[in-house]
Image (cartoon, rainbow, N blue to C red; front, top):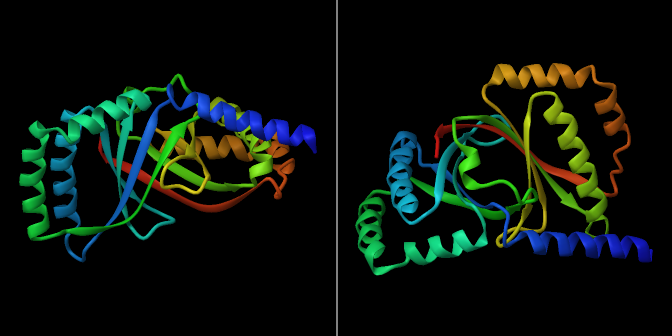
Length: 235
């Protein structure tokens, strides 16, 4: 029992230590009002230019299977310091006039409503916001982790990442931060759906992946949500 507690504590300390150096992400999920999908994307594109002037990197992602056709407005920063500087810049007098003008127009005839938001920290502290360019397709799997077994789960995720990346996927793992409930997000990305299908074919015949799946302990974590999506406005 003491060993498990030490592992959990080590995991918590690891996450805390990466906060200052790892990529920070904020995701705002919106649902367009009927017939206003294109208008909402246009509004987001305008907001994107303001946020990027303040130092954020922004992508707009259309959710697909596994959702109700929501759109994610995704903001990234290199680390916590960059996030703080960007927030201060966005709230500066210089930017205030731009936001007031934008909001006055957007609120006059709203095109959608925000239905959720969450922020997270990339467990790979080497990743930067600039590493997420292009228009990838992706799958996201959200796991609710037993707190006392979080270190075990992170270890399994790192092994899964190694296997999946050997099969052509790009994998990023995020721990929820402010606005979250401590869940882990396992995100797999590809340049296109054909590459995704190729990875799936490799997984289906991989003994290593089969063994990884067979060794999964359901008491460690539970899959609570998943969806796929496609970047429609890259950062």
